[in-house]
Length: 159
Image (cartoon, rainbow, N blue to C red; front, side, top):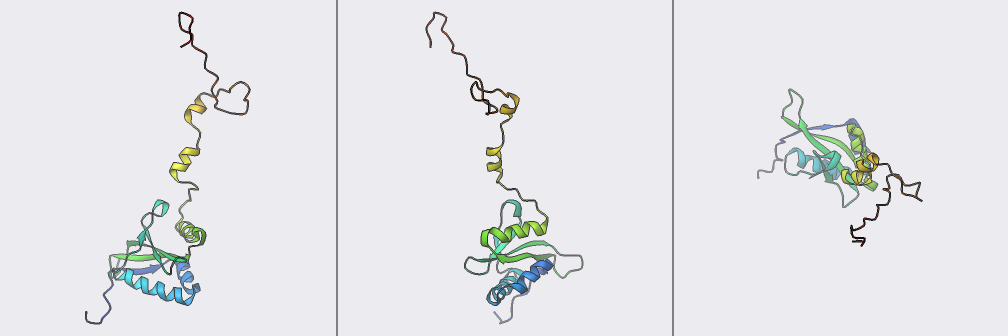
């Protein structure tokens, strides 16, 4: 090493609201954020990949467990000195997943209140809709099937 900082491999861009987040953050969090951004821009550090509706974005921990920064790598504008840029979307406390809600709102991503699996488990079965029988004595349960008839053996004995 020659003592010089590494050359950036990405440009840096901020959502204007993320810049406000950075300026409003406590001084120690802001210092860590700037240091981690330098690492991201030089390619020395990449945040952990997010999943679900925020797939393609990354998060960086700014202190032990409270503050996060979310960014994405995207193509840089034409004429930029680099082909890709680190685009910072938000820098917020993690409390009750606030940062992830803010990121989705800033990006215009609609929230799914449930995971796809939970949504499927809570939805009505197509068979229940196609056969809207009600069991006798239970008028309030849609989709309940009527009792099945008792099958009799041809010789009179029940199976």
